[in-house]
Image 1 (cartoon, helix red, strand yellow):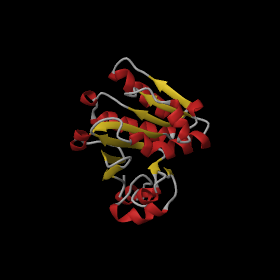
Image 2 (tube, one colour; image 1 turned 90 degrees about the horizontal axis):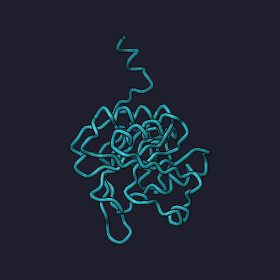
Image 3 (cartoon, rainbow, N blue to C red; image 1 turned 45 degrees about the vertical axis):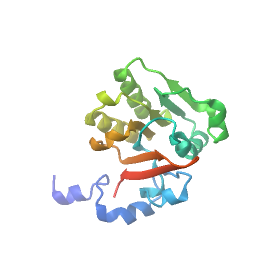
Image 4 (tube, rainbow, N blue to C red; image 1 turned 180 degrees about the vertical axis):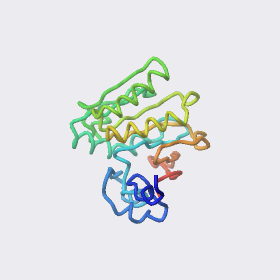
Length: 198
């Protein structure tokens, strides 16, 4: 393949194009937090791609952070919001209070990591899910798995979020967005962007 043809490929981006990328309002979901939107390419979460939330432990406000996007997707699209292997049973009244259409919630409880990975990839690739949230076995998750999940999310146009521990930051990932979350004071969640396009 000619280098000039490669440089014109639509999936190739360059760091110098961050302002152009941020000005485009495609393939993104507003986070619901204007200050955060200004820091993300396309001004929001990747509507068709893999995102990772790295956190010390579950329940620090990660779902509250994603709730505006999940509410938007559950009302704008007639597709499922898949939850694969959640650490807790999602509390329907709380989800409903944040605006999420609970009639579109799909809970999947696989028997093992292999089944969970398969279910997540199929949920993303099928096109029947607007979003997929997953908690996988970190010890068994490989770089090639994140690559397959990123491709599946693009193919099915699915906002896909993996919840991983903080120490996963030291491992390579094909996720296009990686954020580290920490509990703040009160209801506050502190967020660091570790990886983003541009």
